[in-house]
Image (cartoon, rainbow, N blue to C red; front, side, top):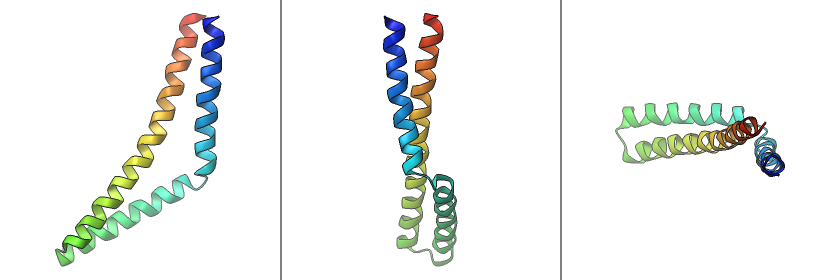
Length: 89
């Protein structure tokens, strides 16, 4: 019975991960753009020593981190469920 519950939990988390990737179909492109924006804002902050540009760069950095964090969370959940399933077999 526990194995069936784990399978169901896996299916749900896998669906969430796939849905997230599908809705973020341009995931890598967005990350690349975000990193480029971060680089540009850091250069502007360095050049102008402007608080505005520093804040913008930090915001870009925060966004990139959140996207990666969300992806890692789904990945870790799936790995945990697979490990539980393996131990039950």
